[in-house]
Image (cartoon, rainbow, N blue to C red; front, side):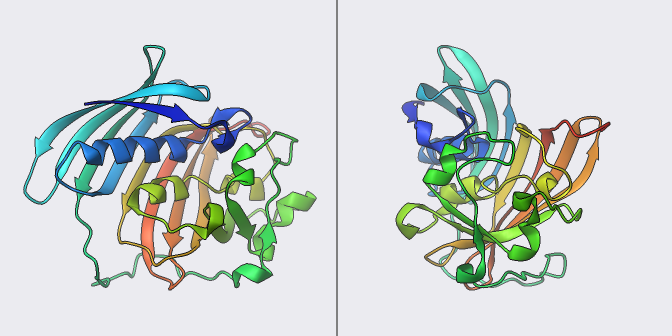
Length: 253
């Protein structure tokens, strides 16, 4: 299946589209090529950053199953492949509860009104048009980097809201896991931290409203960083999680 789409310049960082925004576009197209409504897993490799404007998403069903289907998706611009992804589509239950969640971090984020709004420009002055669209508010305990005082923990926590507090569906959760500033900002400020690979799992349908996010850097070495992200809905239910490998230049890393 071929889907013609358009990258909105309002969802960019330094003029380049956010990786989670692109994966959400691809996940939605991939699920539409199956008999299932929901993306439950996606893994993307970012080959070339497209520009705002027209793109084509090409999907191929690799397996059509009774409980889940797997789809290959490719985002192209001017005939050049930009993102390659594998997507699993299924049907999330309307109501479910964790059987065991001992490996999940405890959500510890103050109420949204007590958190600090992130402005639409990065610490280095880079324009973050994305932050004119969504609302990101950080736990004050993790917002020190905005005043040049990173805590050195490598962790950011806070709230994410879509325009108009629109509800998150499973495809939008693919954006949520890549929406926050990198956790490395709490270690040392840098410029762009481009995603090389992103793997996301959607675990449940979120309650309406903003979601809570934990973005955590785990290891910086060889000009690469791996990060983990956890997303809870307003009720404290884990609804998505992800890991990613990104490029970074910090000191002698």
